[in-house]
Amino acid sequence: MTDLLAQARELLAAHPVVDGHNDLPWALREQVRYDLDRLDIAADQTGRLHTDIPRLRAGGVGAQFWSVYVRSDMAGDDAVSATLEQIDVVRRLADRHPDDLRLAFTADDMEAARAEGRIASLMGAEGGHSINCSLATLRALYDLGVRYMTLTHNDNVPWADSATDEPRAGGLTQFGEEVVREMNRLGMLVDLSHVADGTMRDALRVSAAPVVFSHSSARAVCDHPRNIPDDVLAQLPANGGVAMATFVPKFVLPAAVAWTHAADENMRAHGLHHLDTTPEAMAVHRAFEESHPRPVATAATIADHLDHMREVAGVDHIGIGGDYDGTAFTPADLADVAGYPRLVAELLDRKWSTADLAKLTWQNAVRTLRAAEDVSRELRSAARPSIATIDRLDG
Image (cartoon, rainbow, N blue to C red; front, side, top):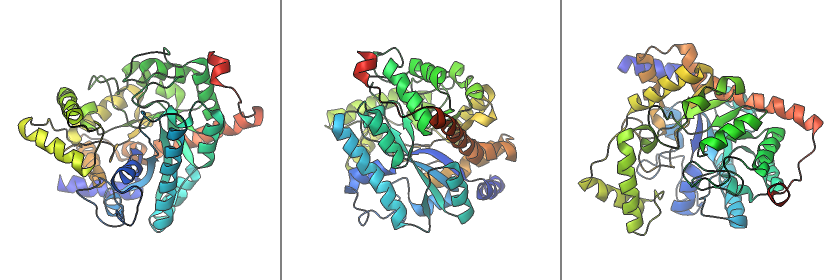
């Protein structure tokens, strides 16, 4: 494996990882309320975060979509304001670390950052609640640099069903379809992680541009509603999009699904949100683990998903979206953002070619964003910004 790790690092030097989803901004909100002096990612933050600049460098990360996520129990203008705070901290991180991070808004920006030896920093909003049913707010987020929006998080929005809520819209409503069309016009990628199967299929039907799954794996390998069914994976070649496999154990390891349900209930019993990853919350998790051993995923677990996703969707339509700092637990040998070489080494051991790995790590994600930009140019020349409202379209 030592020789494979050396090969993996050499490959990543030429074709670094574009990671589709990292929740560092929310971790900074929860732990230090955005005080970057108190939690400086220029230093190793092992034990507090999955992410810092030294480990991003060690992991061969060349571009990161930072999630400007806010919890889906936030609503209305509170959700919008919190999203703006998340955007602000990403911009402040780039300003604070200019030798390492470069804000990126286009595929050309990503390539320029790579040429400069900096990490392209993009943004994705996680959940349609962040726009409060307002297409003008969607446009404002785009103007601030957001380049994908996940249509839902764990709860439905009024115009789209989530994978982990009771179906209400049956997929996308008429307004939901208009959101997708306006995202296409803007050049904002439609992210289908977290959404219900009906929402996935509706979005693929409506979207004129490639879609992404920023952090979802294969349902055929682990039967969890957060994962992608094979019929949807099979539609990606015609759409041009990319499915980015996540590392979250409860989504990739069948044995971890039931354990996580029990651990989440334990968190609630202690008065904590089940997604809380602050040091205090992790202490509760560790105490639970002592009497309830946790099933542990590995790089091989993720590789099993990628093998299947490559078989069904094709190697041109897969990527990586680790979800670091958005999950309490990570695979044993992919503990943090320094771990990507170990996944690449596992895939090399499975005889993935250099050309295929370059597509997985860098080329597919860049191509997908560039294709969305091409669609946007065409649509902007033919259509004005939509002023549709949810009241008018959905009654």
